[in-house]
Length: 387
Image (cartoon, rainbow, N blue to C red; front, top):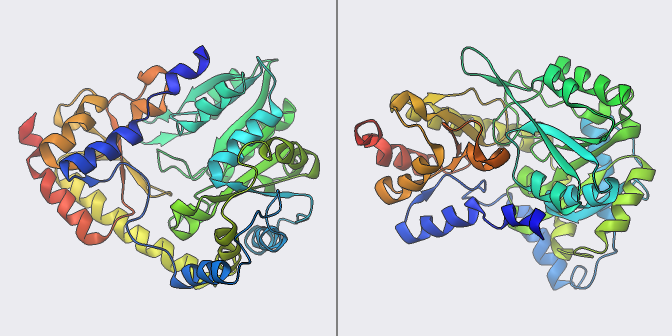
């Protein structure tokens, strides 16, 4: 299909392949280089050995996991949902997003989101036959990025059906403020829009930037689908356990589509996620603290190299403006890095419409061991002299 041809290329696949070929440190793809808690592995192993998770799970996910997801929403956000009707377990957050788009937009409908955006957004929108409408982030005079709410409001038309939001935001590392959230919610309510809220990084926020779910705002529970990720919250990205929660009518639509995609997946890993969602508050606090230290380490290292590092409020990505060292093209820069310095990163161009926006911005993943981050910075030491 013509509309899917632009999505045939994946920078992540390219950079992963090149990283292996050049023995580079891969700071491009967002996966940790250490596993999550041991008790989750043990829970998955028990589910395999007992046979509990080895056959098809129920199409909407094991009831015990749906209940754990509902309990999690109540525990952290005071959101009340029915696990029997308001939760669906998916093959990662990506399938939750794709299922929601396929279920809720008609051919020609517009889906509005902030740009740059995770690349699966445009792919999912095009797959559904809808029209992607990217609203560029506002670039402040000091280089900081913020969601441009005024421009978002101006982008709404009679064809707009869905706002696809993401906070904490990949790739920028921005966490939406309470005021920004309220303004976006007001737009959704005024235009009777559905919000698909990608909150895969809900537990990956840093001090003074606590995550606020859209579903907690007045007027939003009845129009918001919230997407979560076990992989991101518990450092088992290969398990691909995600979920969507929301009002019964919207989740029913998502369930109806999702069962015809992967049908079911990850039986033992679904069962292990029950243990994960019940972990103590200490786990989540220590998880953030460790990532904050890694963020600060990589941020300081890249700053010393002369790159402009943007503030990272959440996720495990930080962004740099490479123009401070005289580089003008992020794609060329990222293709040069593995070959010359043995480090991989991702250009913002792959997250923007046609690769034309934010041409000098590059994303780096800091969810790696401190020694690995130190080695990466050491390898990049000649960056300023190379250009």
